[in-house]
Length: 155
Image (tube, rainbow, N blue to C red; front, side, top):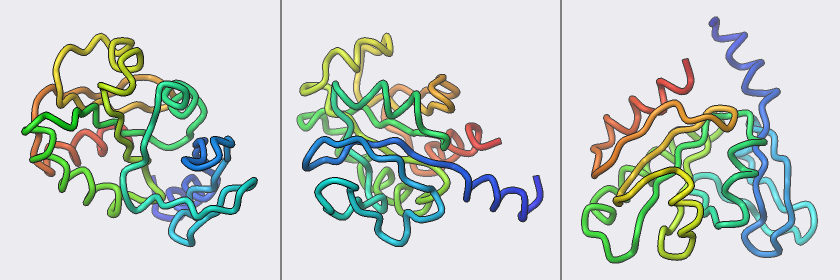
């Protein structure tokens, strides 16, 4: 894919996310993420330079309706390996802003979403493309490993 074609594809791509304040669903153009989009209802800035928090209610729809790959870090606050991996997940959210959605979901707060993936341990990282799983890793993964998963979904 040429750079011009890649830029056109990204410009036409959208994410479907739920505002983390008013829970309104928003379609956000991928090429506008760095410009600080705001919720269409409450006007709260939507930050994509950090992992997007998913919930039981937003998990499936975000995956299904987003054009960009979505990397989901299934974690728990009490999990040491999850905490060790968090800086890498944060860095990827910044670096892949506009090309992928990097998201997190707390397995203690969203157990149905976690079990729907047939996962049993945390951390588990799953990358989805158009709602379908394209890569999965159980256990802590260094940044290079997470990035390789994202690149697989983008090819």
